[in-house]
Length: 137
Image (tube, rainbow, N blue to C red):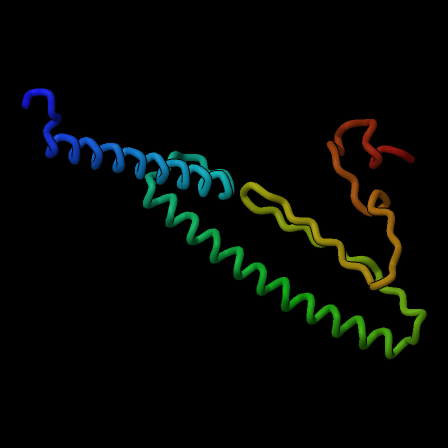
């Protein structure tokens, strides 16, 4: 009888192993979730991480809705301008730059069929550097 393992200790050991594996999976999922969020300066607890993710997803949803509205508005303007001026409508490019905590969003809005060399509109670099295109005469 001494050779047989105690069924109670086996079930407890199994439960402990399952719980350890469950926690490990949760940590991995939280880690993957955290990697998808914008950088945050402080370490967060799991509930804070979930709250931060929830807020971020809501902001992204609002941003998508705003972009959809802008797209519809711009498509409507573009159609009106084309009807008013025929096929020779020239729409000046519009550059909008939005700078947030950790990202910079650059939107270039041009008319349909417009060919633009982006390097003629946007220059990236340090404008105080004498080799920067702003210093060229």
